[in-house]
Amino acid sequence: MADIDTYLDEKRRALAARDARIRRGEAGPVPLTARATVEGGSGVRRIGIRRHAIVSDSAPDFAGFDLGPGSPELQLGVLGSCLAHTILIQAALQEVPITSLEVEVTGTFDPRAGADGFEDIPVHPQDLAYTVQINSPADPAVIEALQVRVEKACPILNLLRLPQNVSGRFVQSRTAKEIDA
Image 1 (cartoon, rainbow, N blue to C red):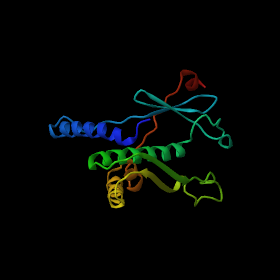
Image 2 (cartoon, one colour; image 1 turned 120 degrees about the horizontal axis):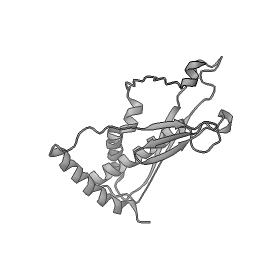
Image 3 (cartoon, one colour; image 1 turned 30 degrees about the vertical axis):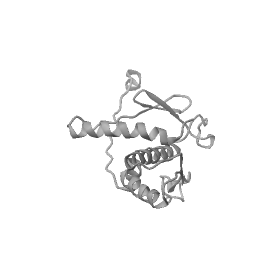
Image 4 (cartoon, rainbow, N blue to C red; image 1 turned 120 degrees about the vertical axis):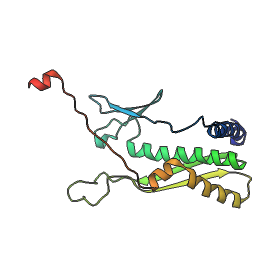
């Protein structure tokens, strides 16, 4: 496999083309959509994003079949993926050479959250942390500056760090059989 540094040349060209589209007024907000459907009998969640499918499931202790990662695990993976991609973008823009890159994200999730006697335990993953293993001939000061740029630019890192408004609604549908009952 070629090293990441080779890919960064391609990334620089793509970013330059994207920047040119932005300057010409040809780019703007992009709507994002993900849909999760639940399969009866298993509870497996199929997540559809564009033309991609991801299976999400729970461990057996939560009535799952362990057919895929759970939602909290997916969130850690999403953060790691976004950090890695943002590192590549910033490295391409700043011409920072990278030979290899790995991002590990850790956290804790307490299944007792919200249960009687455990109302004070948050229902969300906690203690999120990431470690970047980067192999680069660059000066350590350059890598420190890269970290500052990445933490400023990473969309998912900032989504998690900054308060967000999330609206929601439930839309109920019923079959004729359910209505007659």
